[in-house]
View (cartoon, rainbow, N blue to C red):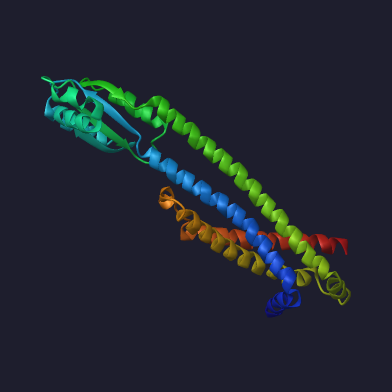
Length: 288
């Protein structure tokens, strides 16, 4: 193993330009994948922010006893899809309308009788904010005799579902395409390194070296290049994140990869460096 490390490190000293080119190619390939991943991460974060606004509003019949509402609120709060249940009285609804609907403020001020009903505002848990879960909760609420009407913006939630599914499909497709392109580019780069040392490999074959003994330094070299390329790509992604975050006030909500995601990206670079070396060296040894 010590010999493999020494030979792998000597490669960087023998061919510094080619080694730098390999690491740079790996870094930029992973950088493209990382940028797309960062865009997908922030898109999902934005959709999560929109999802948090999904709620079901149940309007109550006038004269419903407070005890009935309190008991039903506890029962509804126990639904597996429900996160919180908030009671909005008729007076609270009127005050909210006066503050939020500015164009109707004068009309609401002169009212003799409050026309707005009391309601239950139901927030759903994460993972239960899609159209199917929301509809299931709404249908269950309609079974209560004191509930007059249930509103949840079905068309808006269905559009949100379609957008979420489309974003996931496009993200997976483009992400896989970039990943495959990165693997191909890295494989070609390492193939150049193998061809550059073809004479050395032939001499090792002539003196009786096994295929795995020949492969060892190349595989370790691919691992080191993939690791360095992954670290460089992570650094470039972070610099790009800081750049875009500082451009506009709207970008202050951007998020970056967490430590686990960064580690996964670097490991991905290591894996494709190893895979590219394994394929390139194996192909060359079969042809020697």
